[in-house]
Length: 330
Image 1 (cartoon, helix red, strand yellow):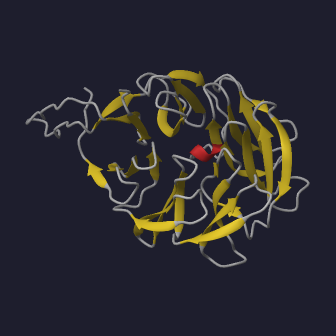
Image 2 (image 1 turned 90 degrees about the vertical axis):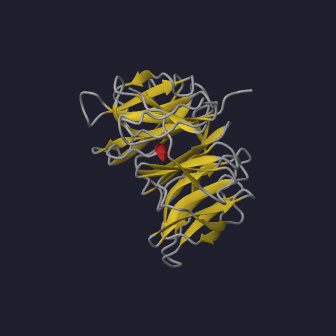
Image 3 (image 1 turned 135 degrees about the vertical axis):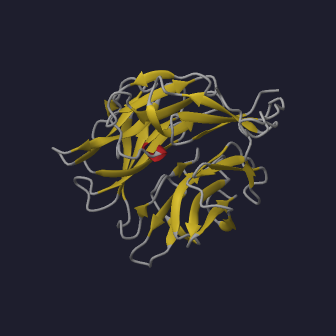
């Protein structure tokens, strides 16, 4: 039976990994450390590769990438790769030019297999915007996608055949624009002028299903102050909108193409919206805290974190349990 490992970033110099195959270890009464049960965490030291991990993304149980601050220069960003579930990491890039480098979001860099991925690059002051880049060597080198005009790019999503980028103020376009990029060619194969950014201003992240269905949280200033999920079943050619009962959104997470979550809050309370039909309809569920980061490794099981507290669900976000046991490294 394959061991299930779940990864989630803690904004410090360590990464914690969830494992469901741990032996029970009694706590040391002198240091008041909690007991370690079969649901616990390993603490992996990343101090040889980076300072302050920024974001993490896995494409399967073993392979993932981590963006962090440079060891000698806090303004630079490093990119590390793991193929053993996060136990060990290999430094791939020490000067990754990511967009919004001050606080890197997972929505700006996406891999779709062991070697290939996309990135919204750093802001270039001269031409006035950021370009789109791709890699075929796990992130060691990056190439600008031909024709990716300078502008303000907001989100990227990828499936096994294509990537989709959404941005605004792109040169030659009056307002929002979508580029569809072929994974095999690394070229733009479709350009779509989107509804006005007053009607489709993207928030947080975006999901692209294998059949070309797109889901992205948006605000619609022309309609009101609420938040919506913009849904397209044809790579962005046409859109429908579903209003969601959230005041703010922090992350979108689709463990499958049918089941997805948008994490946010209502007032001072945590909440999330869930779909089980690929984004056509959404229901609101409460959470015990205002989660800023979640990761579901299937439709039912996932973890969430907020200010050092870690929670898990095993029933598709119906209920959450705080996880308080850690396996402490010395």
